Length: 262
Ligand SMILES: Nc1ncnc2c1ncn2[C@@H]1O[C@H](COP(=O)(O)OP(=O)(O)O)[C@@H](O)[C@H]1O
Ligand SMILES: [Mg+2]
Image 1: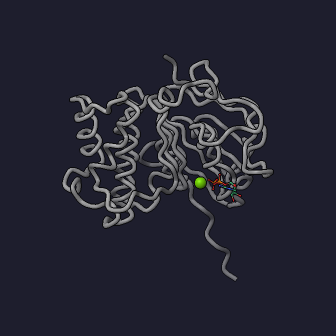
Image 2: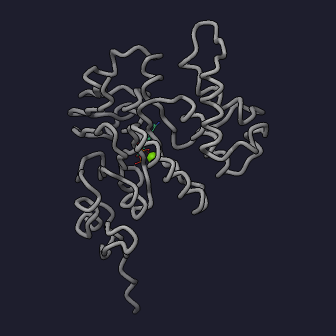
Image 3: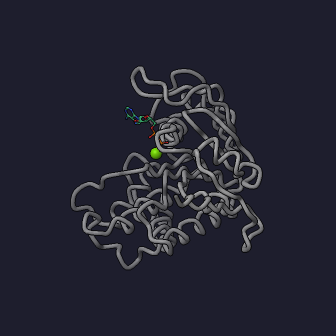
């Protein structure tokens, strides 16, 4: 089954308000796509549309040749996982219980717990380095630890397609790198990932495909080196910067201009 997501002429928003405007993009299968764009440009709205949390005003989202509007909910939940930008855990729930909820789409009517469920939860806790916190109450964790719990829940869902809305926000640099390396490993294992990132240098380094949005419209898409340019930074973020060669990877590295001293 193909996990390519094709977005065609998509317009979406809230009430009367159009946030995504006539957007046509493809999320290539097996790649790590990073969405960049200023605050409020519609990145989260796009991810919500891809996960069918909101219905398009116009246009379509097609997963593996089928309009997601026609895919049964349980099937969609087994194929597409979403880590929302912010989530509130049920009061008093433990880490392991929350991560276990990621298995619900896989369980039958009687919610029988299988060895496969057990393995998926253990694996999700291991890959997010949460084993030692598994019996702790989620409310009592730090913001960064909580973020890793939500990532673990999305991982436990074991969907071939994973949408991550700002997965590194609230994390210190070491855990940011952990999460981004995890994204790369998942991609190399054959999953399709889409992540919203604010750190453009991380986007340039980890993405295999970049989508740049501004005001709900597509500005550019393609390989990081083709998208992350000083012209694009000026156009999308109104930032003056040099883009030089990353001494570690040879890819693009953004160096904002120093402020002019009066
Ligand atoms: N639930 C909502 N109801 C109404 N407006 C919303 C809602 N969520 C987001 N918006 C508005 O839609 C616009 C795009 O938001 P969002 O997709 O969250 O942007 P981004 O993730 O790029 O920062 C913003 O102007 C925001 O205020
Ligand atoms: Mg957002």
